[in-house]
Length: 336
Image (cartoon, rainbow, N blue to C red; front, side):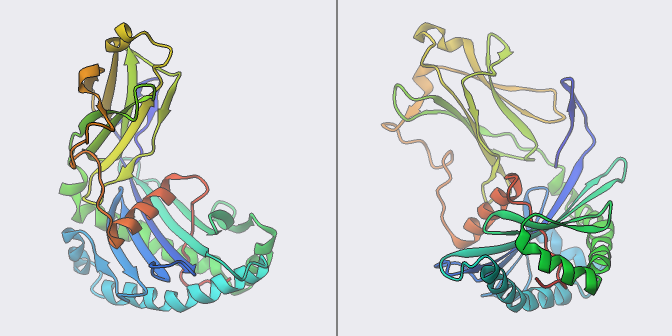
């Protein structure tokens, strides 16, 4: 859900982002061999894995999908079940090509599309990766497969012969041109809401950087930054990723190294949270008496520490979406 910023002027056109990430793994303890996660604007909407072997809605409003596609749960479940075996075969083939038949490995593919609800433009991503590194992807502009690793040449040759690009285009039309717009319509109330975060100042020790931590906000299109005397601080800052909390909201943080700043000047600094498209800024002054350290346990509402399989999968999927190396494709009728 990316909103544009040009010369510090906020733009309000909304990009709706759909990602379908599917992961086949080998020798990963306490983790399903196959996991499929559908995420819309940062919210998990669909889930299936090799243990439950069916596609399930993760948002109540996704149950409306049968209004437009009566067979949706049937074909997505069939796709998931078929992918369990297909993924297992693919990861074994790729492992042999890399001569890495032992140890933990992952074969991942991501299908994604971004829809601008003002211009109606749609951008599509189709990419595969092995062990966290790009393997092969589809360039829709030239309608050709682009090989990233030499080991993917065999895959490209097979897909060219089988006409996999045409199958991909059919899937794109079904999911992006039609499906994505329907999903946004079903969840309009949820997707267009805004929630402000709970902000806390954290510090591991008296000599460590001060971290401004914001949690519980929505949507994920937001900025968290430090200012001094009203001007944004660009040096000695370490921004964190925006991550899901598992309850439909997000968290992020930004650290500021104050080792060279006199204690008396600390209160000239402020942590600022701002949702893109919102002119309002939510400011927290750097008050040394309000900083939580290891000796002062932060409240559970600030630090998310719930560890369940579903949340782990969500966090893994979200992390993959945000890191450049982890852009992957799922093309359901293709084989490596």
